[in-house]
Length: 592
Image 1 (cartoon, rainbow, N blue to C red):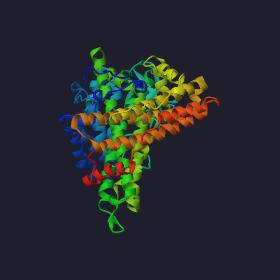
Image 2: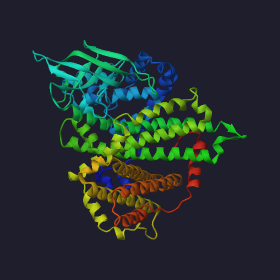
Image 3: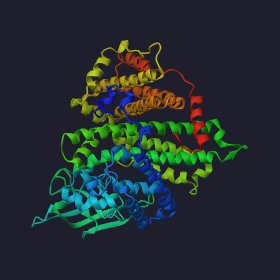
Image 4: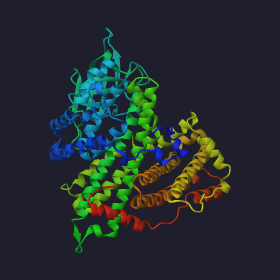
């Protein structure tokens, strides 16, 4: 992994990536695998036996489970050793997020504590704040929560009304306001609270202890899913917060909130992998036991199709997750060598990959929704019964499309952030787009005689990127500054960007797997099916976008270019899916 070209966020649109330059899950080391096994063992021994109890809003039981995970060191994975943690890499943090993702409500409480409840203080806190709070959060002595959302301020976080004003003696801030949808609210010891000081237009952040006088915790919300996690409103009534508990600088709260959201999106992208693997395992075991018409339902072609699609979408998502996670580790090392505070350099590296964070969040949450939905469907009537794990998984999966910024917001961010990065000079998006647009009539699919398997697949992903560039250029020229109001077109472009990044990650992973392991025909089947599907998505999205901005004269040329660039060789996807499902069925669990 040395001497590789580290791409900037969104730069994948105009740059070629070599398989040798990415990290794949097959490269996890022994320590990482042991940490993941510890997480799995914890779920088996401490979480699964208590799921029914904890889902009856047993706040105390959830807190006990969290503290037990702290006793094992699982809360200190991302915390430096000098603060009582293990100081593990970002890749390892993501592996822990993935593994614990199979823990239903526990996973939500655990991830909220370890992520948004702890890391704002780790990344932005002073030395004193870290020593007072992070050490206790890393051990599980304290449980953390994050208080941003308000009744009138959801996605528009900066419109919040919670206010802080300095007392006359200058020793405290008086905090007043209300927060809602606060995970871990019922038993959290520390709260990262966002509020505006005096008449400031932007937020500041504070570390508030729930024991402070004037902090009032509401009853737990009754939710569709994740019922075991404590979610409640918190009220602040003239709460005296010591001035030394201001987190970061005055007015830095909005930046902190956005940075933590980027981190949360990335880790959610990993978290859903574990939930999806659990759903697939439950599904194949059921399919290998359930008989209809005298035969096992796992022998039915229609169900093999469903199970193969579950596997392919999960495997592709996983490929993208660890690709960008390794990039973040590399950037953290670079920034640390250049000097600066470890916490600030870490969050700077994480925040840099805002485009990829939004991609992982959207496609990961929608992948899990697909997997969970098909799991219920394959179970048939039993899937609708609360006796089955897939019923809980189905309900729990739905929140992920709302968590960490809705998928609608994140889709817009994918395009907007990439374009802003390009305008800042991070990469030449518009120059490359202009070249393509000026020669539309001569665009072909680029097919060459004698292409190898991976040369062909790489050509497809490069062609998809060309379609994206053409769409960005045409939409920008047509709508100019009003493009931000054309959300349907931005969604079309986002869809192409996300699917292309996922497909490219999958191709690169399988190519690297072959260089390590030799022939990987089953994984090439995944690539074939994925690219066949992606080509159709890119084609449809591009044609929708083009229809919104093209003139009668330019439309035929644009459409022909898109048709050429989304052309892929026909493959027998039915047989490919059957081979993938066959391995799942034979193994009776997800072992890809």
